[in-house]
Image 1: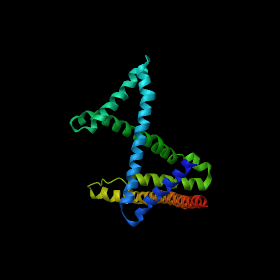
Image 2 (image 1 turned 30 degrees about the horizontal axis):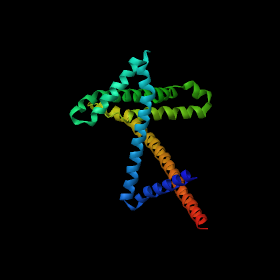
Image 3 (image 1 turned 180 degrees about the vertical axis):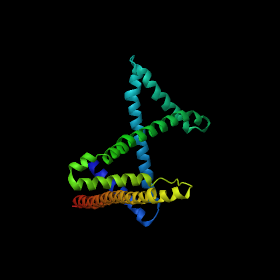
Image 4 (image 1 turned 90 degrees about the horizontal axis):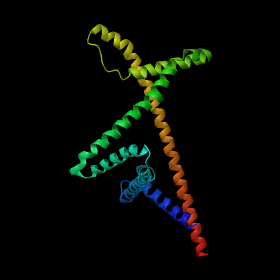
Length: 225
């Protein structure tokens, strides 16, 4: 009961501190931000420490082939710590380069496998469109035109020859304009989804504050009685 009460009070106070930003940037709001950053950093350090202690160190103490593989993340982690010291920060560039390279490769692989290839397959699925009748054919054509137009919307090179320029503007330029409309629709839908999610979180926190205040008043009334 005491832990629930402490959590209720802390959650209510932090919510009120964050909502105080409505009145403008103030020390109470900055206090909430500092608490958020501190808690996030502390949690990350704790998770990293536990992961190292539970995975890397036992692997180093064993005689299995994992011992050699465990040395790589351990060395990279130690080198990354040098970024906090200006004199030896250059040693941390190896770890930073490794992180950036792996992150870029994962992002490119995810975009290729999760977006580009499925979208290309959806555009070229003519047999699927025909099996679904006229509605499927219209839907497939919309997907194809939207995909091609969205790609051509980022084509900024224009031929120098007047004849090729007119042909370019009449074909690629028109498709690019159509693609921009599809991009605007997609961005609008994404913004609407984010706004709806944010409003849902806001309503939930306001409801939690009201519920917390009601429970605190009830506990105070029971204590007084």
